[in-house]
Image: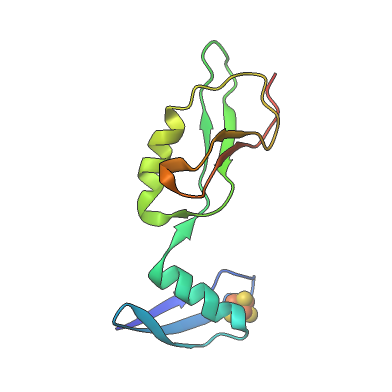
Length: 117
Ligand code: SF4
């Protein structure tokens, strides 16, 4: 199977052609640097995204912005958002505080992206 994707590792945005056989990336072309091959393998075999959202704090009008500290497997993002919605935040919170560790058994943590008194 051949797949066309755009490398988003830098602003150049090389158009990559990836050959996938038996669950492996057997050929990557169009990349102007080695990072494109790494990106293609990640994107075609284990796509992942950073997740950013906000949490409502009971009794407060301002939500708390949060994000994952590393990309989350794309097919687990919906469950990740559900897990985030269930976090009971203990104030105060400082930027970078881990609010939920190892979400869904992954190595991904949910962290605060702002201070909240
Ligand atoms: S392959 Fe290299 S040069 Fe091309 S977009 Fe990706 S990181 Fe940038």
